[in-house]
Amino acid sequence: MPEGQGAPALRRQAAGDPVRQMMRAHGELLAGAVDEWEIAAGLEARGVTDGDARRLRQPDVFGLAAELLARAPRTVARLDGGPNRTERALLPRRTGLRHALPGAAAAVFPALRSPVLGAGLAVFVAVTAWAALRKGPLAVPRGGGAPWAYALLAYALYGPQAVTALSGRGPFDPAAQVPSFAALTLGLVPAACWAHWLAVRSRAQLAPSHSLADYADAVRPRLAVALAGHAAALAALLALLTPGGPLAGPAALGLLLFAARLLSGHGEPLPALAALRGAALAETCTLAVAPLGLPLPGTAPEALACGAAFLFLLPPTFRALSRPAPHHP
Image 1 (cartoon, rainbow, N blue to C red):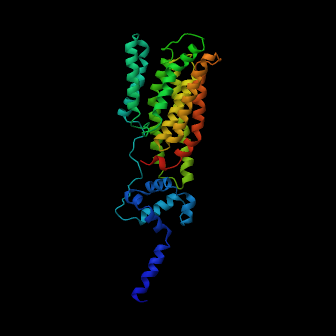
Image 2 (image 1 turned 180 degrees about the horizontal axis):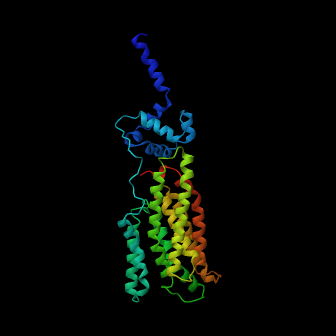
Image 3 (image 1 turned 30 degrees about the horizontal axis):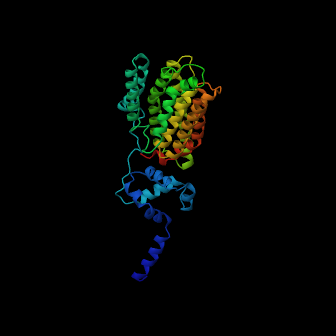
């Protein structure tokens, strides 16, 4: 064959290679990847499915990622021993202390009889809670639902007593809900522990998974365990700090905030924002209709609003967090 005739054939063969076309389309992803699991998460985040991989003559997204890594330039290095093998499943001590600070401060609130000291401590709790949620496993992207979350916490602290006073069924006692509020803020610690555990286990699951469906089947039970574990921790804290008191309202709020933090912290802020906003507005409407004398128990609006918002968040939470892309380091 003459020398010049082979070049067009080779070019046609390269142009018809779908994997090579994927390499050109996702060159930036391949250039920064260190293993096939990072490539698989990046492809899935860009909308590549197992069906797309099969059309490229690969078994699934993970197989396509392995093929892309094998063809990538040798500057892309594979990590020995799998991804995140050395990552600790336990929450770092400094992060745990930062999340424990707001709850510890709120727990001493009932001992302060001075209104000035009480108001100062309330400000301190708000500031330390904001600082705790800026970084770490419960961090939320900017522009998220932080104002709505604070509105829900403010209702948890003063709302039930306000409903009782506005409906004429009793006086307004600003310290009545402090123990349950302290339990909620102390719940930041188990929430951070469960969120960190879920993130570590979900990233570790990338290595043994063979498809997106395989990965989702392994991660969904772990997400359910994290939600159930946090619910159990909240129930224990509420039972300890508010013996005989209502559990449904504060527990529903704690689960709602936990699910919203998980969802927005893993790149899905819109459903979390909608759920927090809806619950806060529903509680505001409760305060508006309380003077009409409706028979509303103080904690019932919180339980109904936050419980409904949490149920609204469950499907998108399981759908989003059972994909590998949200757990990309």
